[in-house]
Structure formats: structure tokens, C-alpha cells
Image (tube, rainbow, N blue to C red; front, side):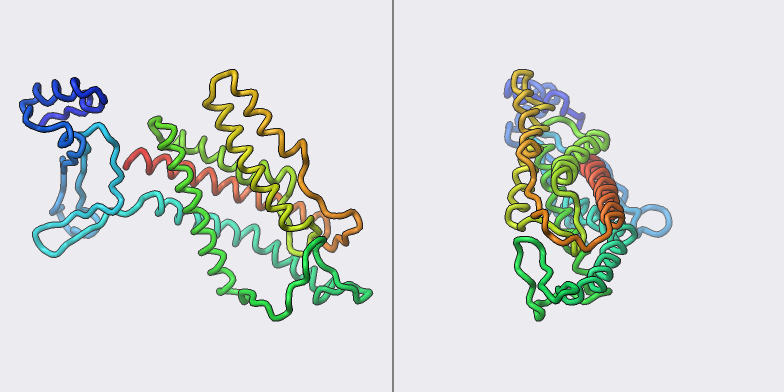
Length: 308
């Protein structure tokens, strides 16, 4: 069968009917054309070992993009293969990359800060015996569960990163779909940089990454400001990039608004127990590792989206 996608991909029904008639398959309905996915090429018995070398090519002859996640391919025997959700796979891969980078550059700084804090204030008490807690927060109970150092703590971090990265990957691909443009790795990289700006860079301008033991404002206020900043930055970037010229000014206002009002800050009398150099080193490490993560995630999601 000749490829008729060049005409079928137009959503005008008359064009589709004409294309089907020209190819000698006028009996096919419009629904059939939209749903038709065919195996166009395959290699089922390569020379030498078959493992990892057998493949097939699927082609969508309809005008509607289809998600193949969950589709199955079977032979006449017992072999069955389910097509994976590539977006989730990209997210898990991004989580693994982030965890690996953190193990090298971020986790050692957190451990150093924890050792410094324990040497300075012991179990939450300063030299005068007074409770030393984060401003506006309550002291943690001594019997509260914490992951044990070593493998348990690392495993929980890796799982949390994989889940978060999968969520970010789904957000990116949802953005691709809403935008509707053809994607490729380079465009995916640009979207990844936008995600980095919204979720990391913009919030860090008001609330830099903080180590254990660093003074900070009340938790709820920080979380609320972070959410507002992320939403305002994402909306502002979308308006500046995609909106008509008359609406781009609103995008700039949204980008600036959270920083004009300012992030919540700890009271000036709060005790600072960490060296400034250690905090600065940690902030740099977090921003660099998160930048690498978002660049990789956006690029891979763009590549995956272009292939599914």
C-alpha cells in the first residue's frame, strides 16, 4: 500500500475521501483511516543470535496521533511484547541521572553540614542549653523515624527522585501535546530549560537551596511562596513565548511579581550555625545538578515524543 499520510493528515474529510479513492481503497471509512496502524517493516530472524536484534516498524496512516503505550505485539506462539510508556521510562532515567549527580556533588555536602550541626548544637541544643530550632518551626521528636544512613537513605532518595522526574516528564510531554508543534531533541532541550527556570532557578532567587541546620522562615510560608513562584514563572514564560504581543507584558509582570513581593525570610535574631562558604558551595552544587537534570530530561522527552 502506498503511503497516503501526506493527504490523510489533513483534517478535511473531503481530502481524506479523495486520497482513499486515488489509492484504490475508496471503501475504507474515515474512521478506518484514522485508526489504521500497520506493520510496515520487520526483521524476525536476523543472522546470528536473535536476542535484541529483532525489530518491527509501526506506521500510523491516520490523521490522529496515537499513544502506543500499552499496545501489545504477539506472534502465533506464546511470545508477547507490551509497548512501554516511553515518557515514564524517560522520567525514571532522569531520576537515575539526578540521583547519581547528587551522590557525587550534593550528598557529601549535606553529610558535612549534618556533622557540623551535631558538633555545634548537639541534639538541637546550643551551648547555653537552649533549644536551637529553625525559626517558626517545632522541634522534631527524638523518636521520629528517619532513614538510616547508607543504603536505606540512598534508596529512598533514588526512589523519590525517580518519582519526581517521572512527574516532570509527564508535565513536559503534556506541554508538548498542548503546544501541538513537531518536537525534536533540540526543542525538548528548550522546554527543559524552561522547566529549570520555573521549578529551580526562579524559586532559588528568593529561597536559595538550604542545608540542614541553616536558618529559614516558617515552612508553610516558604512552601506557599515556592508554589506561587513556580506557577507565575511557568505562566509568564508561556505568555512571553507563545502569546500575542499585547499579552507579553503580562508575562513579564508574572515573572517579576514574586520577587517584587519577596520571599519569606527568617527573623534576624535566628542563629546561623553553618559556615557561609559551605552554604554557597551547596547552593552551587544543587543549581548545577538540577540544571543538568532538566537539560537531559527535556532533550530525552523531546526525542521520545518525536518517535511515538
